[in-house]
Structures are given as structure tokens and as C-alpha cells.
Length: 329
Image (cartoon, rainbow, N blue to C red; front, side, top):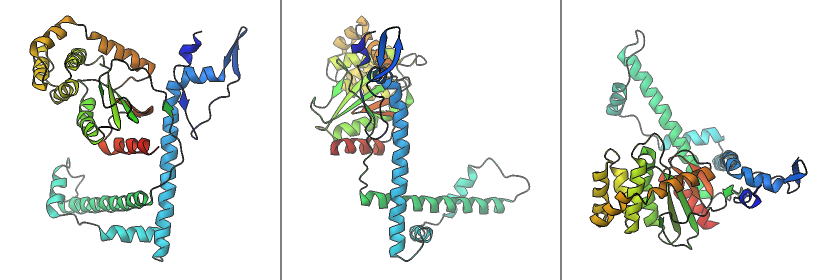
């Protein structure tokens, strides 16, 4: 057994879950398997479980904190929490306009039974009002929690940084926050992430380092060549500009189109064509696939912020929140 390989990853799980003790947990013949070895071997898969535990506990902590804040505000107003929340929500409630109601009605598949249009509109208006009232309550709770600046002591699980040598990088090497992205150039969810990453690069020029890894999924026929094209563009220093153009034009990822995107991003056409035709950049997606296996990543996009796992497409607000947490850490 290669024990150095077993120790490749280490999880820092803080208050989320306690690792096994470093002592003996199993034997095979005379060979001993320790708790530390077991943790190392299972760390990547356990990260997903522990991340789910962390998110559940974090959500519960935020809910409890919000309840305390609402109760405090309600007590100051000499009202019950429910009455105070309802009253505050009514102050910011916006009535459903006739044109909004009509537009919503037009999207309905049809009436049920013998109900008249007036009955359907009345029920639809009631439903829309209830949704708006609930949204107003939720907004008030979010504002209370944000203003209180919750001091959350839970420690998120994280994976030790893996050697990602050769991956396209944006940002300084000594940036306090590293974002590793596994993406597929033909994946529509990866494409949605493109503008978000562009914004983050501009917002955190010195604090954030972004590393791109290619994970072309088997169902996407053009993803591998697109990855090679972006890598050839990276040789000329225009990876991110080319990547954005590829994401914006996923319906056209043929050889000629990929060359056009790279040239428009600033690449020299002849150098780019020579690189792409040589096939030498096929290593970028093969290495990306190998790295994804190591990280137990099987879908795109997948991200790690300072080792914290974030699966699936994420909006700008959620990514900024995690980055700000890491900067404050």
C-alpha cells in the first residue's frame, strides 16, 4: 500500500465532524490500517457528506439566530413574533397589478372543471398575494440577519489544495483565496458561470486566484476540442478572453469557429492553428479528467474555494459570500 498516496488529501473539519482516531481501525494479516490512513483514503468522498452536514447545521444556526432577532424586535414593539413580521411585511407589500394578474393567467394551461375565469383570477390573485407576503417576510428576516452580522463559529470542511500545475491561472500566486473550477466548454451550466467568474476577476484582482480545469463530459462531442482550443489560446496569454467567447457561442464549436474566437480574443491565427492541429494540448483535458477523479468530481461546474466544495451552478451572491468569508478568516 502506498501510504504517501493515501495521505495526499487532508480534511480540516473543525466543529463539523470528528475524524477517527489515529489508532488502529483494521488489520489485514499483520498489516495495520490506522484511522489517519482511513481518513486520508476516504477524505474526498467524505468531504461531500461533511459539506452537506455543514450546510444543514449552518442553515439551522441562521434560522435560530433569525428567530432570536425577530423575537427581540417583536418584544420591543410589544407584539408576538408572527404579528410583528406580518405587520412589517404589510408595510412593504405591493399589490398585484391587473396587468400582472392577466399575464400570469395567460401562462396557465386552462381552467379546471366548470370554474369561471373570474373564479380562476380570484384564486390566482390570492395565491400571488400570499407569495408576495411570504417573500416580504423572508426579505425582512434576511435583512435582520445581515445587519446583526452573525458570528458563526462552525468550521466548514475543506480539502487540502491539490497540485494543479499547468492549469490556466488568473490572479497572483500569493492570493489569500484560491478558486479551482472544473468546467466543460459545452456544458450550459458552465457557460452560466463564465460571466460570474469574469466579474470575480475584476472585483478581486489581488485577493483571488482562479484555476481552470477541463472536465469534458462524454455526452458533449465538442468539449475536448474546445478545451484544446482554449489551451492553445492560453499559450498566447488569451485563455480567459477565448473561454468567454466559447461559452457565449456553444452552438458553434466546430474547428473554424474555435479559431475565430481565439483570433478575436487576440491570438495569432497561424500560431493558434499550428497548436490546435498538432494535438499537443490534448493533455489538458486528459489531465483534467484525472484530476477530477482525484477530487471525486463527476459533473460540471464544480468548484473548490480554498478547498471548500461548491457543486453545481452558483450565482454571484453565493460565491461572493464564500470568498468574503475566506478573506475574513
